[in-house]
Structure formats: C-alpha cells, structure tokens
Length: 302
Image (tube, rainbow, N blue to C red; front, side, top):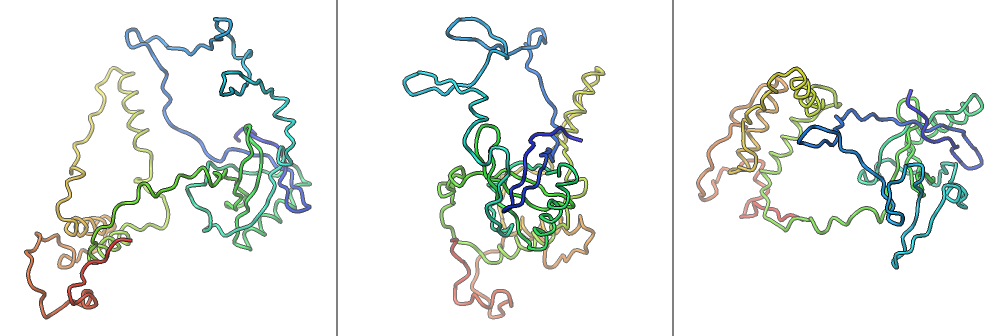
C-alpha cells in the first residue's frame, strides 16, 4: 500500500466525501548517484547561505519570493496553510464533461482516491457509479504543493482516479511547429491507413510494451558488478532517415506487420516494387484511383 499523499474530501454539491489520495503509479527507473570519476567518490550537494557565507542544514531552509530589485519576501508554511482558499483541503467538483473533450496534453500523473471510513463509503460509491452511468469525467479544483490546480476525476475499475490538469495557458501554441503545405498522394495515405490497421492492438500487453531500456541497464550493472563484459548492443537492421520511396517503405512495413501477426501476405498487393517510371495514365484506371481522374492525384495538406 503506497503512503498517503493528501487527506481531504471530495466536494460534490452539498455532499462531502472524505478521501485519502494515494499514488497510482510507480517509478522503476534506475537511479544514479553523481560520483568523482577519478576515485568513484560520491559527490554531495551542500546548502550555502550567501549572507553568512557558510553551509546550512536542511532544517534551516525555508521559502522566499525574490522581487525584481533583489529583495526577498519570506513565506512560511503556516502562511501557505492559512491561504483563504476553499480548496485548501477539498477537491471541489466544478463541472462534468465527456472524457474525449479533455486534451491529453493537459493530463498529469494519476492518483487513486480511497474513501476514509465507513461513513464515506456510500457517497463514494454513489459518485463512482454516477460517473460511470453518465459516461462523464469530473473537473475539479484543489490546492496542492503550494498552488491551486485543476484536476480530472474518472472511474478506473472499482475506484475513482484523480489526474492533475494543466491550466490552458500552460499548453504551448503548436502553430510554430506546423509543417508547411506539401502535395500528398492519396495512395500513400491509404497505405499508411493499412499500416495502422495492421499494427492495431486491443490492449497494451505483450513483450513489445516492456521497459527494455531499464532491463538492459540492469544487465550492464550486473555484468560490471561480477567483472564480466557488458552485453554488446545489437547491430541495427536498418538505418533510420534513409527513406527513398515512401510508397515502397509503407508497403514493406504493412507486409512485416501482417507477418508478425501471423496473417497471410498478399504479395501482389503489398510487395515493394521499384519506383515506376512516369508515364501517361492508363485507360484502365483502378477503382481506388477512378475518383481522381483528370490529373487530380494529389491532395494539398491542410
């Protein structure tokens, strides 16, 4: 059972549901320490006070807001706890929306909400079933870690999960990275759709969804611990960025994806041919290209 992160209540109209917030995720990344490369000695951080020109302990450190002129305004933990916010110890539900209306870029780490005691069990379950039956997620407001935040409550199995939400002004405008317009070929788009269909899965289970980087890192650490030669990196079978014929690459990718799933390959439809020489349109137009006769093979990108 993970440690409690936050104790408060879900405020749902006039209903209050006492809850405990527990982390819903675990981090299995390998943690490194900084060392002195000459002798492998650990390199430690020190807290230094500029005013007294001496090292201070962690217990002597507080918070302060630096003004443009260099002055610092101290802010104590007691002052933060006494902020006049109704969300200081409550997760206040302010709206309900379809889950598809939430931009995934705004969704942060997840937490499980656990009802506190028997008195909270019934309103907790009522809210969970109501969210499920209405096919909605709840948007909440709460104060946490020195700031007020938006949150998203959703049903996950038999519990209610909470996600932090970024404020709208915390999402950068993507206009600066929009690619310039290019002429697109509908056949290439169709082949890309075929590749998506060939790679479609029902869930995220399987060996391809495991953390290979962490496993390889553990193998290197164990080899060095036992004075063995670390395993060598496999030679890549192909070099990325060497795309010559987009259609041929898409067709070959579709064939490999279908072969990986054990499907029978249609060699006539998905064999990667050499780039054909340009020639006049044939009178026997394929059914897929019939709607683009008259020289309209390309569709401008939007």
